[in-house]
Image (cartoon, rainbow, N blue to C red):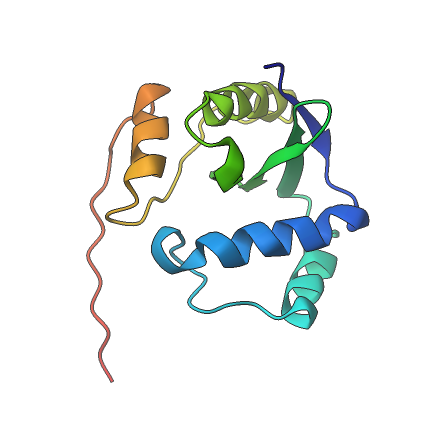
Amino acid sequence: MEIKLRQVSKEDWDYILELRNNFFKDDFIEQKKILTKKEHYEYMKNQKSNTNFHQWISSDGKNNVGYIRLLKDDVSIIVDQKFQNKGIGTKMLELMEKEARKIGLKKIKALVRKNNFSSEKIFLKNNYNVTTLMFEKEIE
C-alpha cells in the first residue's frame, strides 16, 4: 500500500477531530476530554499562524488513513483504527521525517503516554530512543 502525506486543509478538520476524539482517552497526554467542534476549530485556527506547527493527512490514494503533526520538534501520530497494524504508521513517520529535514529540524521527539503500547511500539520500531521518564502528580 502506497502512503502519501499532504498538507492539512480546513476540509480535513472534521476528520482530525474524529481521530482525536476516538483516541484521546488512552493515548493523549494533553487532551483530557472529548473536544467540541468549536474547541477543535479554534485550536486549528490558532495554529494556522504558528510557524512551528506542521501537519499532514496520510492517504493511500483512496482513503484518509491517518494524521501526523509536528509542534516544534514534538511529533504526534494517529493511524485510523481501520488501517492499523499494516505498516502505515511507520511509513507516515518516514515521510514526516523527510518533511522535518526540509524545515531544518535535526531532532524529533514524541511524548508517549504510559500504556500507549501501539505508539511505543511504532516509535521503537523506527529507531526512536527512550530518553526520559516523566513523573507527575496532581495536587489540589
